[in-house]
Length: 134
Image (cartoon, rainbow, N blue to C red; front, side, top):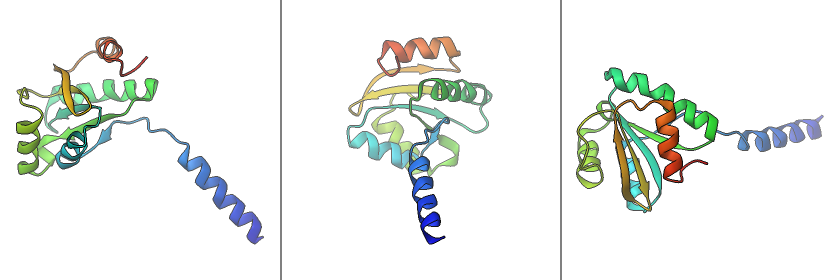
């Protein structure tokens, strides 16, 4: 009986490690700064919880993540520490004027950004153009 439990736990661990996320990865501004300081490449979306365009855009981003297996990070500005948000904007998102805004960083350097609730086909084409998805 013990062997079956151990085998079951091992199988569960293996299969749990093989799952892929089909959702946007929510992170804090401090985590985004840490990743960009470490020269990571990433797609980052900033939004605000009360923003209607952000609410409209999130399902589009979710669908891209689900269909292409790409990791997209999301920082909700009004749910975060104000000093961290200000640091992120000052250091990496100088162009931040509206939400939602989607940023593409390669090796910690801003390559491109798009403002607004981008439609699925436009987001897909833009990410393909920037070699984020195939």
